Image (cartoon, rainbow, N blue to C red):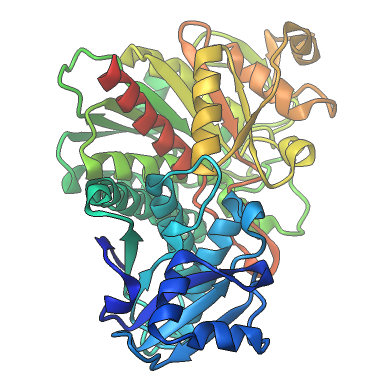
Length: 502
């Protein structure tokens, strides 16, 4: 898909289709009014006859409108003007993409960027439009023998800006969005890939591919023998039951002016299939446990976007990648292991494996002298119960970092919600036989998981994103969402902007 920006009056655009909005009560948007004036009231006459009310999800496609240079005009219902919010703006853009792709319009000039969304500027509107369009058009059909290709797919969207002064802002928004979308697509593709293909070794190869593609990008892969030397007993306890060897993947992007600048470190949970181990999961929807590496997929997507934009920042990504399988050698409930930090852990439930691989990766991250560490994981079903499928759960030990992530989530639309990690919750992780138990009972399950991780993050500023509720959708629309790539990228962009202003 090709995206660009342009200023100019809509009736003068020689395009396959011009897209404009109509509000509830049949009120025309500014560009729709210009087209109506040019066509001697054709649009308003049709609306008065009841062809379109302006309600959300309504549309009307017009052909060969007099005194315009376009082939078609697509009118989209936008609902009540004062109620146009973030979600509805995305829905309208997704609807545009779906209609044009189905009806053979290969290019479009979108005037939806003129619609007013409270506290949102042209940069935001262009970026959200691109994300919504690409989300609507995304397909994972690499493994299908009969691909249903659109005969004349939508290939190009030009976004209208009000004046030439806005062109640089719009062009930057397009460039950033294109990189973010590329990262989201990579994240989705990795997560949607079945577990028999997307193994720890496959993830390692994808990292090597990124290292060959981008400048300032280094990759290091540690094997199980290397992890044994580092005494990563927690991570290795998870991989014991699998015939696929675990990998500890490190991707290092060095874009800052000074190599000495402390990096942001992302840690992504990479359980490429989670059977639960000896604590075997129920069979229903177990196929979706290929998505237990969505934290890793999100980290891959963010690193790809950062490197594509060649951003002036140092970022390190660490991905502990393994399967969690039942086997004669698999870790058993009641086993005690020693983590890289020296902390002993009683494994009461082998299905609480994500925290075991993350705790060693979090200890390992200290070697990079990080400014902040953010781990991303599909960690607990309890987070889904607490927050549903809308925000990710956010935990941490540093309020400024928490606030930065909350703000990035609000702007990007990839929201998170701050949860507590009070000392009282640690009582639930007491073990009679080891320093910590790996579960804390049914109550506050997402919190006790985060509190477990917090025991390994005392030497740096840390945040934890539990994305179990937002990383994928089940049912008829099953598939990865690509979250939290938009959140992570907005955090990075905000951080760079703040540094430039100081």
